[in-house]
Image (cartoon, rainbow, N blue to C red; front, side, top):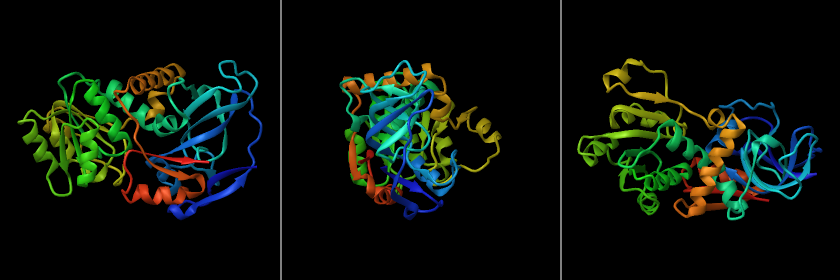
Length: 325
């Protein structure tokens, strides 16, 4: 028996239950991982609330990313062996001491990446990679807008965008978060609670506007985000922290400058094993180079996952949050 955090009915943070469960032996194509650290992400709250349906029904073990050591290998697995250090993003099962995982979803960790770093960055960092390098390929000289610039994905987007030569504009809610974003690559900060962010973007860019808006907020930042884009600019909506963007008249994209709008997910970008490995390699390389640092600003014990969710949803966290067994 191992400790895990399960959801028996969907709802608020109080439905997260710390308990003992049985993890069996790995089947064909699977590995069993002893987890050293698990990441906490906004997507975990969507599954917990039932906004995203659980692929395994109820109850389920919460959590979508972790890092650890392979302790058993199922038949047919050739790339991984017992003792390998790995990390993954995979729907559910992250908040537990052990997990069974399809071997083709695990990536080997280089020696210079710790378990805690990996658990803090796999989902957020690989999300930043596809957003910056695939959804819209950021070039030197581009102006980019990052909403929630002091959040987990935001801090990585700011650093990585800066490393690619972009001018990074970030929105934040408080002065402390503004200082954090500025220390992590932001060139300009907008305090969205007291400033009109679209008007400030226009001012900052002298009317040129941005090549891309990276938006993990959703409802409250749309459609004003479209007013931050230059003609043929890209609106990339990758999260819904304030609620879903509702259906809109697609002609708005034409009237605001032949804009592009997309709602990408890592699942699609990393669906093929080769793409998953490539995205992870770029992430490990840039973190290994020191150009992108992974700030782990909150650590909780696995049994305190409820508190982690309360703090995350209360906007009381910055950077990455992890759970430790």
